[in-house]
Image (cartoon, rainbow over all chains, first blue to last red; front, side):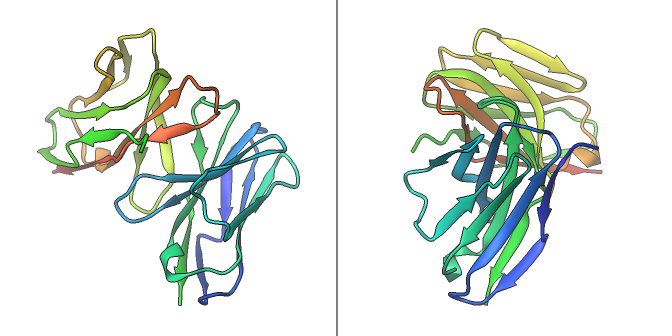
Length: 112
Length: 112
């Protein structure tokens, strides 16, 4: 089945130690999104790619970076994780901007 | 903040009853979407209603949209235990920025 896959489901890292989360899609969608979601809150958009065009949200910390090497894969890099970065990170795709988004099941990041 | 508001924040009803959730937003929109999120999982798209539509149905779901009041409602009829989840509205504004703005969510609990 076509889907959005996030690996790993759970990630533990140390304070300040770089970490990379990955997302892949088999939908061949143009747009890929990264969201941060904290407990009982709405997903917060960090950035998105339309094809290779990167779009950063104004309030996304510089600590967060992203790469999209090809249509299928997108990565979220957190350069120096702080305790406040512990959250669920959700990847989503859509065929075009504003259309229904297909979400992965997320990576829950813990910071020690 | 451009984030929408949902009301109520939490709702508990008996199985078989109807559940109604409301969403208010701030900008002019192209469409409004509703998503469900089960605990620890990604969001799942339920239904999309365009700005020129007033009501839409999908199975046990009924969505209304009032653009003059910048509000929408989601009605789930004949609720089931499996409907227990968080529900989010999301809007695509008409600024052409390829993204959705999510509401704060309603936590729905169906009591068997």
